[in-house]
Length: 399
Image (cartoon, rainbow, N blue to C red):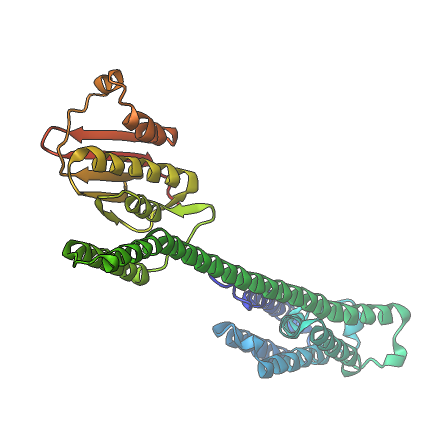
């Protein structure tokens, strides 16, 4: 689970402002080309367009530049200068004639950038600065404030309000997106912590089950057997070797448990590997080697059914195969879970109909029935003197 980028929303808004900047620059160039003959100072107008173009290219070359404080300040200074120059290059009184202003929307991009970077307060102040420049463009154009008529005052006020509202609105949106990103980040961190906690608890529970099912029971058996040997008046070499072998087996089991890599536990899932190892430990008089490709997490009920079926197969080996060892191997291949139980015992002729007639239905009920209930199948391969192999196959869903 990856953490969300808290600055992603700010960068997205900044890219939007850059698009506005380029569109405004293009429109400013069109107005400069169309009004050159009417300008009192066409050369100054084109210098202003060149400065705006160079500045836009500079910011585009590194899109993080327009978020740096010194560049934001320079951007606002350039925007205010463009507004004043727009009043300077046109004939006196032209700003009141309703003709298109040279700078038009370009200064808005600076106001928006301040809103994105600094929030609603910074955006509003930048808008106020642009609005002040808009008001000062009247005297620069030779129009005194005292000569402004009511409609002209309303038009000026509307322009100032638009600058301020633009910065305020974008600032609010920027703060809202940043707050949402921060909340999402906190929620993601909490989810990661909870997931790690669940994984640790599941691993601890798995280890506790291993220790309880195997180590503690064996230690109790070792204790009991050692007491019997100590109470005996003679040295029982066989008993001592038996106790030593049990201790050695548990040493191996504990080392494997400690060195096992931790795995992620899906919600509602259970490790089939743990179930198979428990099934192998409950069969007396049989040494079982369990090998799996991974922890094999699956739906809890299915894992329990397969482990119970394997336990029954191992008990059959202990009761009838005439051998003291068996192997269990499990893996997922081609979308199916395969669990194989093998022994090198006496073997038998597997005839389901004959076994059914003889009333020997343990394999059918305890193994085949359990596996078929979860959508799987069982294949038995055995012959007298050649041991037995039972393969359980269950389809699994891939993530």
